[in-house]
Length: 575
Picture (cartoon, helix red, strand yellow):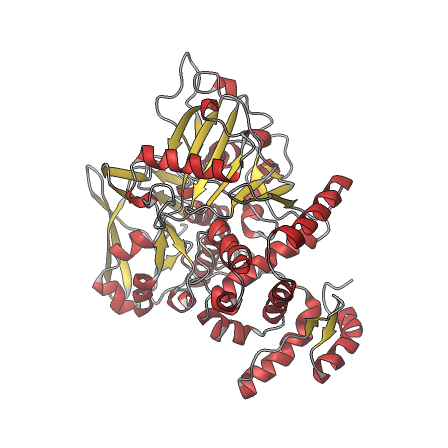
């Protein structure tokens, strides 16, 4: 008889764990509080927006993207079958080609490539972006060189230094933004991290912020690489619904509208879980996988659980913030750019994507009242900074005030009159934002954010409670961000722990580290000696020379550089 596993939570982590366990013959039941699955990754209908037999308009919780360095999630997506697609659901991923950095007050927009150049247009876009970056953003050349050297420092740092030094330092401090120009802080230190990962440069770990930035840069330079991929249809249509159907075929039981109300612990084991709702019930299983968001799980961790697993106390110190979306439905499509747009000066840290251009097989006239031709999906990442226009923060604004202010901030950055008030047919704010009164909002689905030192408060997937595993975006993973990739990796780690604890002969789930160029291996080895033996200051292997090239930073570095071509030929995966 196969072991039973109760998975608490039906988001990406919970569904990923169910997928891996079901493929290995376990008896799996997923308990999800909402009436639908997918968690923050799901899409949803706009209630009551359909008419004359048309479907309700599609909406997203907020934009989501799939960088090229993701490996765990695409691997799972390839194993979700879709008729006529050998890559399964992964075949529904399409690459964007451009990224827009829009500035306010009529300043020049920067449009750069979102993939390694493949066409003449890509090369032209790269040249224009580099020229605009050099002339328009206002970052002095010495500061740009300094930023490059900070990235080289991170690349050539050993793991021990990264976790013991850079993890405890903010990205703002590591990048030296306090001593640099305003433009440096705006573009290189604060803007990208704040917009892309709902993090603040003054709080985010230098290790995580810098390393994710490096991964995106590697995507842009890798042959065939793409820094940004999106789905070719609303998320549920392109991914979640086929996934749920596949899990049901594998025998997974899905319990919806089944919130977790309590977790019982005795003798170092979970003895039962209370599922709430109208008729509360107590369920039991051989193993339990907690795939709940941190803000929910820490309310359920009992004193008995904390005594059995003291590391759960770290959950109380993890930080969540608001990052939610608002949709604008347009009478005439306004693509803006073939990819994501970053509104670099926006007080509310806005990013957007025009979705219709990626949804080739989606006929928007079959939705709503039939008039919608474009959908602008906007994410609001800063809810506590006052608007220059109204003086109000988003978290203290009404839904209508949020709509009006977001639209005006977009127009501040796109001043060519492509965003016209009379082009907006309808709008929809993420329903996780609740308004008990006109001046105070709550967020039912905040996002875990990375802060300096938070790695030491994040638990492993395994716990000292013998039949409890953790699978959520707060678990320690290589990605180390609240992402769909991190949630999927955490689920794999939890499943592997169950396989170990049950002595299962089934193959383990693959877990991949983030990739970095093997050529820097010798430099990291040298830095390990400097750190472990002497705790000496980090010193990168290379620096930017006055002529614009790279040169060794000292005698040892020169020796390593001289030997790098020979060393590289001996490294695994080297050409």
